[in-house]
Amino acid sequence: MSHIFPVTVNYEDTDMGGIVYHANYLKFIERARSAWVRGLGVDQNALRDRGTVFAVRRIVADFIAPARLDDALEVTTEVQTCTGVRIVLDQTVRHGETVLFRAEVEMVAIDHTTGAVQRLPRALRAAI
Image (cartoon, rainbow, N blue to C red; front, side):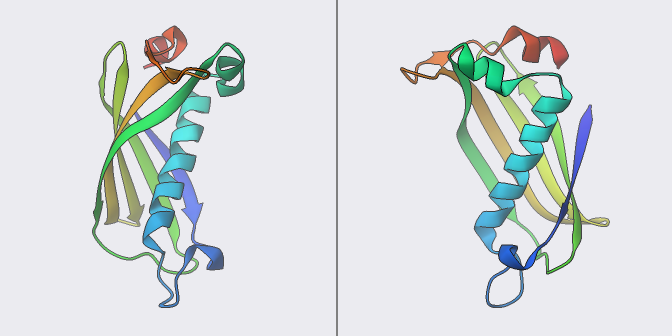
């Protein structure tokens, strides 16, 4: 199941050359992941209150083509794998049919206090 999240490139997202600054693609995919989790019905505030938060363990990113000011982008999030303790997502940023950025993102659930890895929340595993 794919989740699509729209992003419009704002002036603050661009560098002196008028293209999206490379680190901002990570912000775009973070926003898309948060929207994806909300769309699954998982309340991250309630999880945190119970001591569990999500952490990105690893990102492999490919910067393919630039986005520019006012471009209407789409971030697609798809589950690659989900085990008891980790989830790997494929995230792609497109402008129309053109792929601009791809990332493989590995996430884990951790104890909010100790940072120890925990099993992924049952609600998330069930929703996937």
